[in-house]
Length: 289
Image (cartoon, rainbow, N blue to C red; front, top):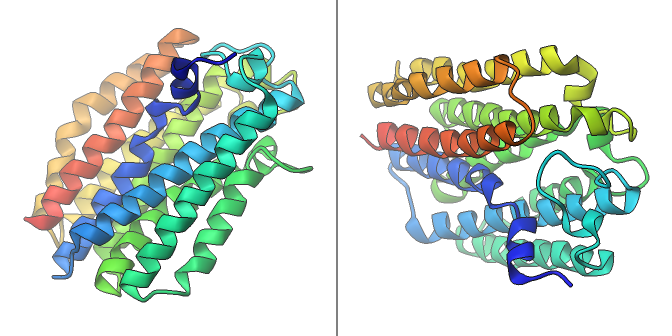
């Protein structure tokens, strides 16, 4: 029977910065437009965190019942390890999605952006379809596309719009940068799992690119946001603060290109999540200033 610690591990806390960073940047962009709102930002953060946890439990369930997680380089999953019943893990995913739905409804009511409920519904369907259903798109190398769209563009621009009722090109730039870093998270996670995914029919983008190609793609995904920050600085000079992260990016790039694997990549996964959060904080400060 799964312990509380097992369930916390199943929620995959290392990935949660991917939910917080876009809300920070979206709120910073709204502030630059003169219309930031702390209550709406907190509601958006609740939606994003609930969706992220729901995705993590949904992936645990779907990969587990398919046998993809029978052998893993990373931490054991709840379903794949047999620590928890598949039905319980699926219920945890649905409960997380339900919380996201309730908070999203509250956000739309406060912001009077009812049409955004349709966007939220699509986001939940995309979260489930990543590894769930008969033809999961994550098994066809499309996971990064969905992550870029929903944890980058939709999360940042949606946060800005529900506060300012409009978006700006710096918000779009921030959305692209955060989306790229979110893709880096999934890329390095899948680089770690290439040996097992390639023999279980899970053809992630990392599997399709091959080990060397996927590692180079990861480096591009963590480096390009620095360039995006420099472009945003043309309108908001404070955005240059993100360049302080260049040494951190360089260190991660060296580790990944150096052939790190197994538990070393788990550390890289954690540090990539923290990099995304740090980028979100610095870009937000830059937009506010």
